[in-house]
Length: 378
View 1 (tube, rainbow, N blue to C red):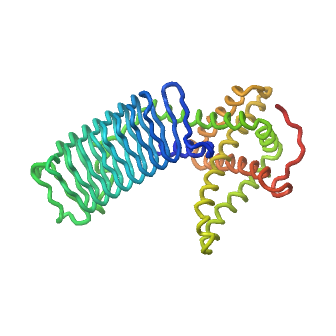
View 2: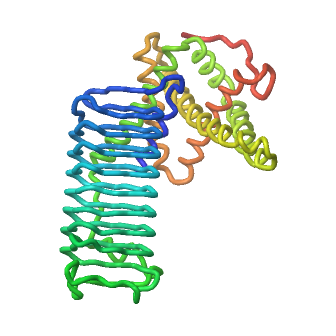
View 3: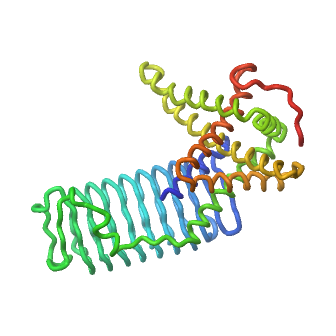
């Protein structure tokens, strides 16, 4: 789920002047916009983010979706990762499904189902089901074990759990499980306060293949590199000046980025104190998120360039070479996340470096980091 949200943020941070942003890499598709519908040819992996997200064509691999209202109308051959206010599954998911939202209506899932929401309705599940919600309605057959954590549970006429059924409720005495759903010998009802992952994690292991983790990491690196390459292609001279200034004064750039980020985030609290300014609060929050993402992208590119120049190499002239340096920086920054505590501060400093550099060109001359006339290289 974290990977889905991370990729969604990356997609939404792409140029806002386009109604729908679309990117094709091999047989994968990336789409973002206010209202996004994919109805093209079948794809391997699909990444979508927007206010309204609709999958209308089959997905041969996995689907990664984020939005306010999500509807899956076509079959997903791999796994599904979805996060939104309303998530509707109207087609079969052949792999596992991990879904979170306020209103969640999963369709038939051949693999395992993991759902967190307020109002959740569950259909047929081929593996196990882990369901957390305020109101949970079980309408189909769950072939494996099921763990339900809910305030209100309803069982439809076709509801059945073939494995062990464990229910965590506020008042276990009010929960009645029909014999048609599961015999009493396979039903366990506990207080919600007793809910502990350790009680069922050994029986329902959520194993994530190493190749999937590596693939997600590399996709994130590739997306960061592509965004950097896009900006370089549009404004090469501006990126050149940003890069040169950041390399010339990294410490001052980091300090400037800290001040600018503090001002952006702190302005939200000030705006809440006024009646007119409160309407600008969402704008300031969006600006803060965009600034953080843009700062990280620029910081990663500067890191890649500094590493390349540090090895005594010459700065590449063409766009492919600069794209490779952006990927190099994103790769190293991603590895830094794996280092406890120190890795977080390293990536934070990298982001502040990018924000401070961008602020030097966005704010009037002389504010914070000065735009000195330094020698620039291609």
